[in-house]
Amino acid sequence: MTIKALLLSASRVGDTPYLEHTLPFIKPLTETARNWVFIPYAGISLGYDAYLEKVREGLKALNIHISGIHEHADPRQAVRDADGIMVGGGNTFHLLHELYRYDLLFTIREQVEAGKPYVGWSAGSNIAGLSIRTTNDMPIIEPPSFTALGLVPFQLNPHYTDYQAPGHNGETRAQRLLEFTLVDPLTPIVGIQEGTALYREGSSLTLQGDKEGYFFKGSVQKEPIAAGADLSHLL
Image (cartoon, rainbow, N blue to C red; front, side, top):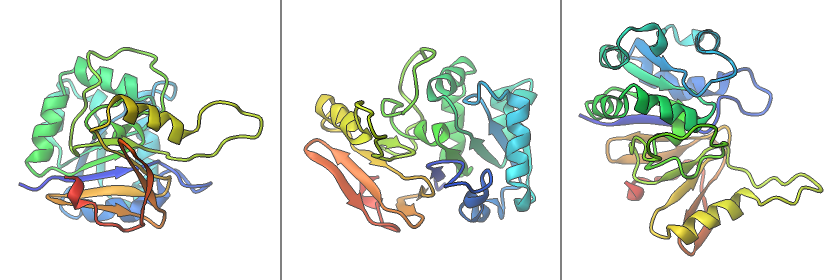
C-alpha cells in the first residue's frame, strides 16, 4: 500500500481560526477516510477532552467523525479500527513519551504503511520524522527514546522562523539547527513555515502552501526550498 502522510507546520497561520487553513490540505484525505482517531497527547495544559472538541470544531466543515484515542479502552485497537490518524500539536516530548507508554509507535507506523492516512501538525508532524531531536519544545518529560515514527527519512522543524525579537540575544532557529548538523552531518532537516505542509504519497513528497521551506544538512545551511517543490529525492 501507499503511505499518505500530511505533515502540517502549524494549526494556525497568522490570526486565522483554529485549523481553518488546513482544511484544503486535509480534505482530499477524507474522501474515503471518514472515521478518524485523534491523538491529543501533546496537549497537556488544554486537557484531552477539550482538545478533542477544539479539533472537532475546527474540522467540522469536513463532515468526518473524530474520536479521541483517550476515549478508547484499547488505544492500539482504536488506531487499527480508524480510517485515518490525526496527531495534534503541543509538547513533542510528552507526545512521544505517551506513544511509547501505550506501545503505539509500531501500530501507527504499521497502519500508515498499510495505506491509512496520517495527518499531523506541529508536534504531530515532528514525530513523523526520524527523531524529535529538532523539535522546538522544552523537554518536560523524558521519553524512552527520541526515535520517532520515521514516516519520512529526515528530521522536521515545524514553525520554522528566524525571527529574533529586538534585544533578545538567544540563538536563531538556523543557529540551533546548525548545531544539530555539526553533531550529525549526515541527517537532513526540512524546516517548514506556518501555513505550509509536507505531503508524502508513496514515493512522492511535495512542499504544499505558498511559502518556501528550508533544507539543512552538513555544510548546506538554510537552502531555500521553493513553494510547491518536489522533494521526492529525499525519500
